[in-house]
Amino acid sequence: MRRYGKNPDEDDVRVRPDRRGSRPRSRNRPKHADAAEGFVLTIDRGRITCLVEQRTVTAMKARELGRKGVVVGDRVAVVGDVSGDPGTLARIVRVEERTSVLRRTADDDDPYERVVVANADQLAIVTALADPPPRPRLVDRCLVAAYDGGLDPLLMLTKSDLAPADELLESYAPLGVRAVACNRDELATGEGAARVLDLLADRVTAFVGHSGVGKTTLVNALVPARQRATGEVNVVTGRGRHTTTSALALPLPDDKGWAIDTPGVRSFGLAHVDPSRVIHAFPDLEPGTADCPRNCSHDEPDCALDAWVAEGRADPARLASLRRLLATRERREGD
Ligand SMILES: Nc1nc2c(ncn2[C@@H]2O[C@H](COP(=O)(O)OP(=O)(O)OP(=O)(O)O)[C@@H](O)[C@H]2O)c(=O)[nH]1
Ligand SMILES: [Zn+2]
Image (cartoon, rainbow, N blue to C red):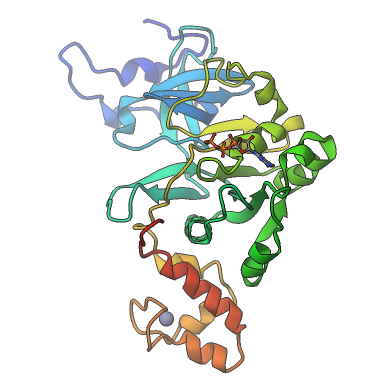
């Protein structure tokens, strides 16, 4: 019997099609009890880089996964050669259930939703206070994606040396979104970075933002190991500058969580969003939807939320914010 690396696993052999190319004998297939646990760091043209114990292992999807997608942040079961030695290729045989999913559709009229990041605890929405000016609708759309996918949003306002944050902070106050303003010079001091890192401690945070907002500057300040590698060998993958369209998970200092950098977004398609999942993030309003008409958009004359608020059971500013968010699901010029 041929052995596959250090972790010989019968499955490796059994799931392989036989010489006649028949399908794997799925009924007899063991459940990969010996598989190693992996954490997906990045994906590049079908090559999946995972962290297995403390090793960086390159893997591909096993045939038995079928069309099931693997995305950055996924917890996976890996079999085969998990030594991480150059030239080795392990196989991912299972994707564990996800605790959250950051999804987007490329465009609102694009029916294909893509999961961008799995299992992130929070979504850092990076917005410059100036140069480029804030795009509140894009922020709102990111908030909707966060609420829809089960991530805690976190506003990261960059370039605070160029403009004050008050106005923007005020418009998000009713949502109770945590926010932090920072700038490059401040971040370069350990104290400035520590203030931001406090918000990320022991959590997996996905960073989104459109081009030019200073996301790279911010993430590099938080993950100094990456900055040192400028030039640009990636600290995690050991490969050249990260130019793929995949997200990339970077360990925060002292193993205090992960930052998942995502490629710059120009838009954040929301065709997949279900209003009821968004309302779930508004526990003060959710019970008020009990008397709504079926499939209520919560932004129509019969919506029961108006009465709920009129009776003083929730803050009108909360309802206004919810409606503003839901309204961003409809695409407009410039989104
Ligand atoms: N004034 C000021 N400029 C900043 C700050 N942070 C970043 N910049 C500048 O803003 C520009 C964009 O910064 P990046 O960090 O490359 O932004 P990005 O969001 O990663 O953009 P892409 O690389 O296009 O995806 C650069 O010229 C930075 O030098 C800041 O705090 N203040
Ligand atoms: Zn309603």
